[in-house]
Length: 161
Image (cartoon, rainbow, N blue to C red; front, side, top):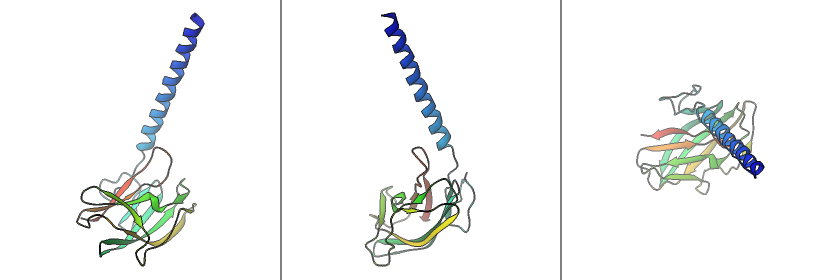
């Protein structure tokens, strides 16, 4: 009987220690700098603007336009981080009502691409990325969530104020 109680206490202690270690790992991971497009940036600076730099994974944005309810932009990536890929699912356009919209590929001139593996400072792009948000009214924000694992990053870049 005493032995069972001791085993339970040990298992409870190990479980509590595991939860604490995971919590510390999450806090450390989330405290890594994330660029916010120049204002309040705690990450590595990037240029030319507009751009985002998340742990040496950089995305540049150019030629932003809007026509017929479609928001288009060109993006280029440079990956000198420990991430392994870029993926269109990592990008969303957030509208004035804070509704996030995924990239679309069906409008003419929009790049058809899928998850692309690259690293060691390699570049990808320029790619023409398109979104069909519910509203094109300002503000519009490009949200990038590069894949660095479970607890990491999201960076926002205002593309229309």
